[in-house]
Image 1: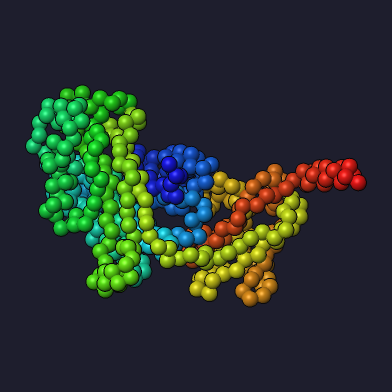
Image 2: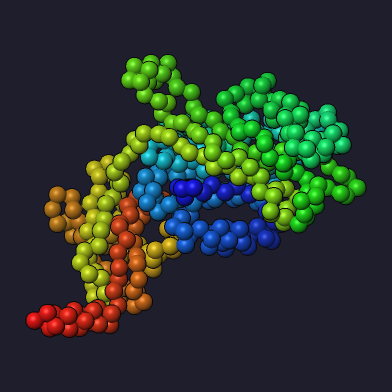
Length: 413
């Protein structure tokens, strides 16, 4: 299978004690460190994250896509204890991907079988309250595409414990679908209009004994349920857009294909099993050029001043606080640079909007290796330009190579 271009990771029920939360706010929480450490060597960069006590959302993107991700913004809504506590609620990240506005919403909704209406009310409140800047998509449902996922806590109603477990054992999941509270609500509740989901062809993800694949054997013996879900909604086209698409025989602006929807039974640190969704997004790239293009000039070696050239599109909102970072391949986030320089401090205009700056040779890492340059926008709070990878050569390695070449030449003569 082709490597994903993005990883979107939503977690719920992290340790939300005040002491742990404050420590995690000052330093990266253990889960962020784990995922970042695992994905960075594979070429994924943590683009942004948002946490509300026990609810966390992380976005990782392949480095080559970074210049085409814009309008990054995060938001959150507390719904626990009448909106005063963040153990329940939703966290969101919105971004523009090649010109298409996408919102990722990770929720932890109220628990217990009898609280279906509370879950729907909480979801409706999150949709109403969360607002983003910009004219095109101020509300969650204004985006071209919304992914909604998390511990949504919907249960299987009416069926008894024995029938549910027997249906699961025989993998006759379809016998449970019509009693699933979320499936029912999608047919009747306006707030869920247009939301789609893959078929529930996997084992219900709640509730398990810890470090086990056995359902709850405690005195409570909770009924199994598909509490953990992934849904999506594509924004409806206006009549004008629909007519234009039909006239040009073009597809919808964005099309979602679900390739995998499954539970991950091998994980046992929670009484829930994680759910994985793999999606393919089909769309025409509305943005094909980075706001800033940059490249290293010449050969880079420790101790020698290095030259960087770059140019900007006319619409780029530059700032005196913009900077260029030097990153080792496999870097974790925009702050994981080896060194950086403020572009406006020593910027020289060469011609036709092409600029150059020098990086002090003392800042060039003596270890050598493969690196990349990234242009960080202060106004946009994101990386807007990425160079091609290049080598920083060690001084001694360069000399050894020159001697070897000389020996070859002397044999030829």
